[in-house]
Length: 274
Image (cartoon, rainbow, N blue to C red; front, side, top):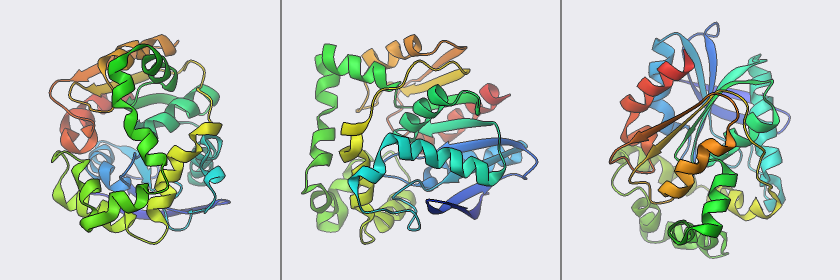
């Protein structure tokens, strides 16, 4: 069971799901595209019951209260700043950080750039950005898997994803995500400006630079059926962690691990966080 929370920062008001009491060990969970905090509902509830204080915000562009219109407002620097601002508002000087997909990318950057704030990192699905970049250059399979990124940057991407009752958006989930969650995402991303804001994360990547290696204890969780990230990048991820590193491979799991295998992920998380 998770509750709703609003976290007001200088950038605006972030909507969030939360579980557990304020005195528990703090854990911040970041969602990916094209999702929202909804993807962490089960995990947040379980972490709360286990004594943690878990908070999953709707990130920049996904929270209506933080939806700037300019592409330049979705640079990685801004996304990392949001993480720290949210933690500051929650009174967290140091916390565990968990991210999936784009949320994992933000997590890699935050942990690399602010190791004093991050107790542990858990990245789900998306490897370290430098590992992805190397695989994109050297591995034809990863190069092909990453073609969707250029499609998302096109001006027509919003219309294409939302046409025919968001048929293309729905198809992305490969029947691996609960139908109620898909309806939630479609409703959210159909709001005026919401899909553009979400796609601006991709369009702003021209300003982003891959982070350095991560020194905090890190767990990377990858599903063998992930269509976006292949084994080359996944297996190279450890090269970009100088601290304690743990690689967990979920057989037959797709890109959508937090919703497809929430119990398996929660068990790994509890072990890592403790």
